[in-house]
Amino acid sequence: MIYDKAHELAKAFKCSPDYRQYQESKKEVSANKENLKILQEFHTKQLEIQTMQMLGQEIPAEKIKEYEKMAELLQLNPSVKTFLQAEYRIMQTFADVQKILAEALNLELPKFND
Image (cartoon, rainbow, N blue to C red; front, side, top):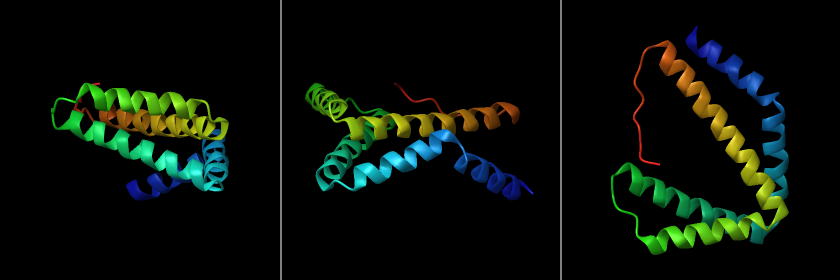
């Protein structure tokens, strides 16, 4: 029953405007190899920093500056910017659903440093 409800939620999610925007912008970014490459590099840096945060490691200032500079440059690329905004909305929705479930089940989610 739980899995059936999860599939229903996924189906509803696929019909959402945020998901459609995400898919459209993903297709546009993927059509340009240079955009796709810089986006992958950005995600790699992002994951590296998030991993360090979760492990409680200190993030070197130069790594943060490099990441921030890359984020600023990506904002100048309209198709990548649109994709990143759509991706953020999708991830925020996932986080909201996780929070709703955790609160309803009286679970404590791990907290990471922001």
